Length: 72
Image (cartoon, rainbow, N blue to C red; front, top):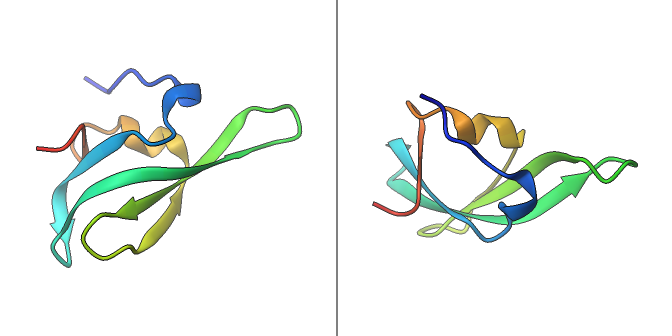
């Protein structure tokens, strides 16, 4: 079952990658991008261990085979 996410509450939320790469397991949503109608279009997540940032569509966080809400 996919996660229920309110896109307006994503900023600074914590996520765990269930299949980590480069030992990057824990992520924090550090930026939200909006369209001209103030609808969330994408988010930027940052790996806690490396600081590497990834831009992605916020709907990708709903995939519970890839992401878990919170840090585990």
